[in-house]
Image (tube, rainbow over all chains, first blue to last red; front, side):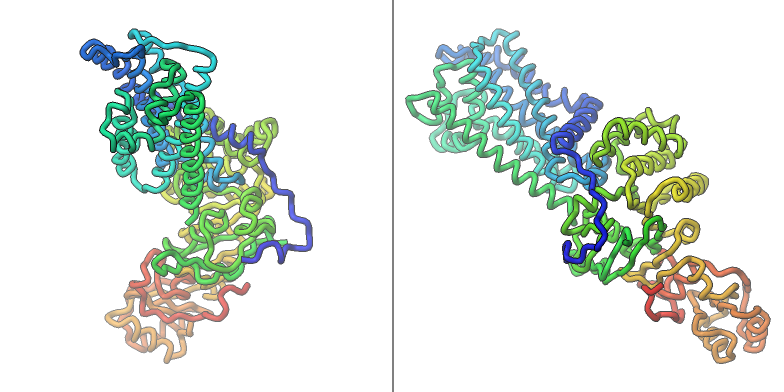
Length: 284
Length: 329
């Protein structure tokens, strides 16, 4: 189509535009308001991981005697449960994209004078806050049940960085799937694969060194494995056993940065894909 | 400068489904323009292209001078839409929905608050505005959606089948509201509808859309005038087409007469006496004879050979006439 070559001689009215920060804040506020009115979106993803931290972890510690290292197994599984709550929370958040499309204001948002990528990013901001809160609750419950954590400023930074970057990856994955499927049933059907399957391979309940060689290699390619190793490095394992299992290097700080880079690469790639898939699905 | 300019607009969906076959129109500032046609005629595709959610296959479209393909953000910034179906955040209040629209359309908070109060009064929604939208009735929701679309004071307002699904009383109330907007808002309106009376009541000009093409574009008065002051309609016996041909041969029915199903409609450019005499003399076994004012339904049948809401497969045996250049005023 022709663009501006045939523009009228009269000057056009100046189109009103919102600043990107204001747009993102508005969209995130909308999502937060909607989420706050559906408490199940906050509570349901917490249920399984909370039980894992409260009941399963102490029971397994007692039954098996733990990891036979200096690492406290209850805390080990407590952090592992964060690797379940983030995917579940993100997948639930992705479901709201389908609700928006079928029964919400998505068409109104698509008609707004804003870049459509912001619709993905605004939702993602709320998913990040929610995941951070849920991760805090799971770690807190684990501590209440006897999990031993070594909290330092640097450790918290590693934990928070891993949590946030991994949540970006998971939410982008959920948004991508939500933009591709047409029916909520199909999306719900994909939930076990997206949110639960990786949990069994990524060293959530045991170190990946306990896996057979082939499966350990698969685990090393998964962002969840890197994220969990980073979270444990931050909170319960300053010597970085999990990171050594992945990288086999002598410098744990380098290993941590490498793992963070891996999760970040996944997060950026999936975010770009999510934005592209959403914007393409928005236009017929 | 027209607020809406559409030239040779085409859309073909996957599977070679031609939704638009090159439509052409312009809407002047302050005008209410109606797109009238049955479901599947191409109305919603036209709105989709103008609101940048459907990508055209060819042609150009501009809103407020902005090309909808090359300058989509600018085009969206000068327009608002009231969608056919519920497009609203049910768990939020009406006010929150309006505030959200205002922020996304770049209206600052103070101005938005004043504007919302103004619209609450205009649209009489003060009882609703602070309640959750998912508790509204269909008509209440429509009012709030119209208010939302107007918060940003758009140059162009799209109303996509605004009264569909509403009960008759609420529908009439809403039509009053929409008709009243013209007096109170400096806005150009494009309204799509499959209700003939709605187009007649609201629109300054109407384009009749049939299978992705305009078959007529004019003022409702001019479209009706093409059929004269009155039409005579009757149920023909076994062969309506033969009855129509007999009246034509007799000279009492012109090329604009048509038959659809068992009924024959004859525009009367004089009185009904000659036609009634012809029915008698030709022994047409006519029943249910009525003389009435023409409607846009007659215009539509005459131009397309089908009644509103019929699929093309149900095409009548009617004679189509007046097929010159339908897009010319």
